Image (cartoon, rainbow, N blue to C red; front, side, top):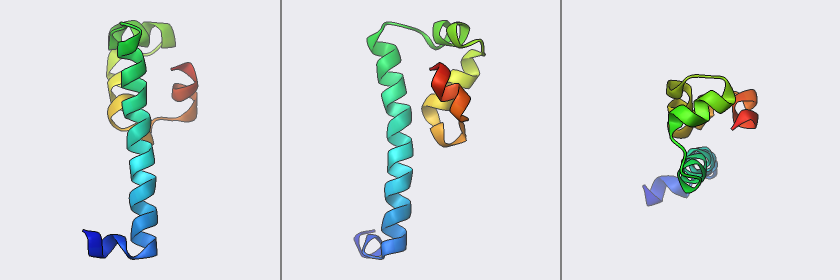
Length: 70
């Protein structure tokens, strides 16, 4: 992996994926810090708990509107 990360295009792609992944982690941490369940957050957002789960796990697939509601 270290050898692959020396390639600029591989490193750039890896860093982008890492940033996206960290968004999901940050969303989940914030929700838990506030003591909210995914169901409670989903009601506040006007969506379903599965959408909140997907946004936390795979934020790359979340649209901007979903993230703004979060």
